Length: 221
Image (cartoon, helix red, strand yellow):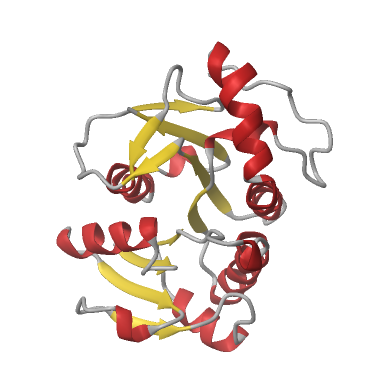
């Protein structure tokens, strides 16, 4: 497949890049700093906080799927996911690309957004600890980051593209196992952890699963 990977030097993005190259896909990597890419792939330099629309559209040209690992890592970039994804959507429409898979986070189904000002209080897949103890603390600490991801999901929902959102729980740096559970429309029951490598592998697999377009998919161990 011809794949465009956005934020290809980040935690998830780098894993997608490495696995896509290993699988023999034709890869275009969209990154802020090309010097961080050592793989033999086409590299397009773009700052998703203020991208050049022509350059970004060229990176999407002919892509069978776009995979995005965009997400803020500090308070300074707490709007990067929503703003960057809007730029990606615009570029994809210009280029005629339709399939996009993005990483979000497990709690986002209960986070308010402009399109969903009154989301459910609990996710059906969450247990007692996540609902009443861990969840409220995590959402308080990462309030800005989660609000950004919720707005990002709004952008995709309004895009008219063939999108799939992947919501992992806490990410680890453990190696890929290929052994994980998934769920559509709700979090994985009892799922607290997943490695970035396994999350990336799942996203890569979804690129060839058009039946998941328009769905939110959860993954966890």
